[in-house]
Image (cartoon, rainbow, N blue to C red; front, side, top):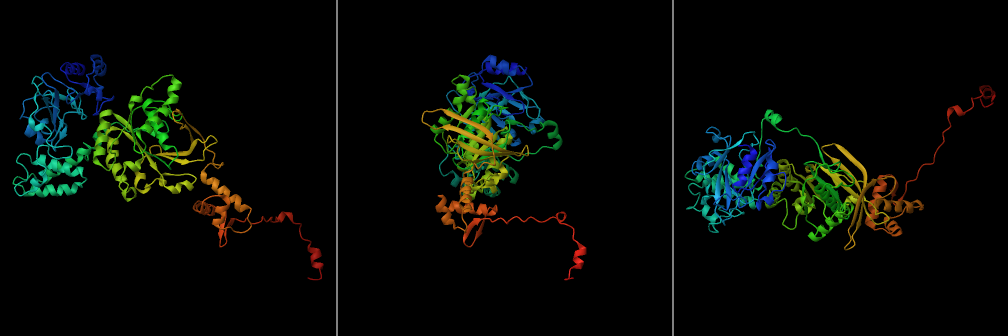
Length: 615
């Protein structure tokens, strides 16, 4: 059967399906709606009319209802151990990529089971298999595996059997068995306890998952399990135990284990990397970036405007959006009501310009409503991973980073958190991230700021490939927020300097007025707050004949002593003023000396000189 014929047959049999781009594991469009409704025949025909474009994904759980059942569950066997134990044990519908007796020894397989009506089965996994049920998908025949091998039914005429009890989830999300006593760990380690016959690997996985939820280092858990295995009557060996432990820890972000491929294979099969923009000159594709600024600089407004443009395609600060995408916006500092009001304000000019009540693409933008969010917690990484995969998210904005990170040790662990979680999600799904972050207070006295001014820069700078730094400028005559922007992108190896952002925001209650524009920055005109202070200091000292103490300068120009002292140091370094025992004074310039040039002199009269009596 062709891809289209198979897809239509799936739909006719009660399965919920949707398209997945070849070589990927997620849908091009949001697929959550297919958990509650089937695609129409017309949609299926449109999706799969081109045989070479899409694979077929089946929504597991109650979304798919084969005749006689209230849902389906697919057991994905990942290891030879699982295949040996389960492949021939159950006579049900089975699928495999390139199935034959030889390939079954090194490839996994799928066992299809029916879920009884009215029963909900949770998705879970062990060291050897994934139980794909509620909220999960499975790639079905005749789709192509990433390796290029086709998925095939072993015997398409075999009926689906009811899901056996052993595949129901035996423990909670925290790794605690749902059908055991509260003392299950004590029993596991007791003299009379230990591993249950036939469940050795599952119990290692279960215990490791429990330990991972409490951030116990993987090497500690591995050592405990290796010791227990060595004391068991039927030890599994170091390799199998280590594999089970690592599988449990990788359950937070599945399929993120260390993976390699021969270079010749990668060069032949992997697409060549090419640089591209989501928003021209602002957001590179699949990049991890940062927006750095002091408070009250407009960075949250800036990030909201950016998210709205990415989702809807409206230009961002005059720059075209080259690729719209699904966006996840995570605001961790402001109340949800304030965030939504800001989105309304940002969208208002576009709605007015187009004369419509809703901008197409607003449904591509997802906003975190509530939740305990911290990248140091595995639950957060797990949630982001699942949401990105299920909703085909291509860009995530997190504001601010300090709330989403473990800030102990002066941001000392956030660099590792970003590398271990965010970078893996980016590499897996091509999803970019932008973090809104604070800079150190010392930057308020600098003319321009750079990535080195980020809070905890020594730990976080290396994690960011795109940096947008914003230095607060003096408000204009209308009291609009203004900022000097410097951009740097690792992919382009170039700087974008001297761009000034002006945010025109009406914060009046009930008002919907927002405007953001870029104007050239004139470095000759003092526009930074500290420039004004320095001008005051120089103007005052210019009229003083004697050195002046900092306290007197502070009193005379109306600025705090600490601020004056900081700017005095900057002016001394710039050789504008000098410091003496008596205080500070303007650097005295040497009077200009006009040297007489040799050609301006008359030649000497040697005759008269010789007649002079003095000689």
